Every structure is written in structure tokens, then in C-alpha cells.
Length: 212
Image (cartoon, rainbow, N blue to C red):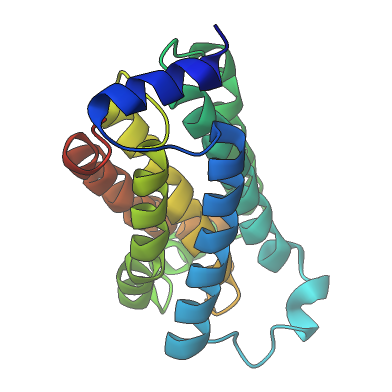
């Protein structure tokens, strides 16, 4: 029996209908991006020099890290939604974004005088970062948790944590267009804290929302 057929059979036993898993997560991904974009546009919008900053490697680096994290988290979430698991073979991909961020931090430490490290890390916008990444990401988190109901994950807390990680990465990618702090040191601390909060929230909520 194919996995999608098994998921539909299990869901029928549980009393709710499901879409094919591939279609479900593509729809969920599109809906999450649109929802994050709408919240970002209403609450913040891009910074005034966003277009001019496209020639800045530090500015572009924020998007590279967030997109790498979102891509690996999306692949892991889809795999983890299947009853046979299959996510373990993809776990190494989850290290891509942290390794990229670590490389950026090391380069920043070499490029910036040590007297300026603390200032670069604290930045000017840390409270806004900790507020708006979760605010932008809470809707996508709900979308991904609901999408898990169309699968049959056996490790709900882990699947929920991945859903939060994915939602946080999407939110971080949008927030990066507004954030005036481009230092990898700032991204490593404040973006990571905000995304970790969403990941923890996903792990707590998944056993209630994504249960099948």
C-alpha cells in the first residue's frame, strides 16, 4: 500500500478526510507565504533603502540563511508527516543554515574590530525582531500544524517543532527586508531566539492540533 493511501485509510478510521500529502503541503506552503506577506505588509513593510541594499552582502546574507532554513525545514516537515518517518535521512540538511550562519559570524568577527562586536550583536532593533518574527510567523505555524492533520506523523512534538522552525524561517525572511541590522552577529542572536520561540510553541501545540 502506498503511503498516501495508508494516510487516507488511517484518517478515515480517525473520522476526517485528507488531501494527498504532496498537494497538502504545497497548498500549505503557498498559503503560509501569502499570510506572512500580508501581515508583514500591514505591520512593517520593507525598510526605505531595501532596493539600494540589494548590493550589500550583509543584507542579502540574511535572506540566504532564512531561505536555507525554510527549505530544509519544509523537506523535513513533509517527511516527518508520513507514518513511516523518513526524516532522519534529511536531518543533515537542517545543519545547512546554522553552518552558513556560523561562517557569516566568523567572517564578521574578522572584518569588524573587536570593540564593535557587542554593538553589532545588540543592534538597534532587537525588541522589534523578537516581537515581529513571531507575529508574522504565528499564522504560518497554524497553517503547517493543520497541514499535519492530513498526514500521519508519529512524533507530533518533533513535527510541531519543525512546523515552528519553518514558520519562523519564513517570518525571518520577510522581517529581514525591514530590519536595519544586517550583521550576522545580530541575526545569530535575535533571529535565532525569535525562531526558537516559534519552534517551541509548535512542539507544544502539535499534540493538540495535529493529532490524527
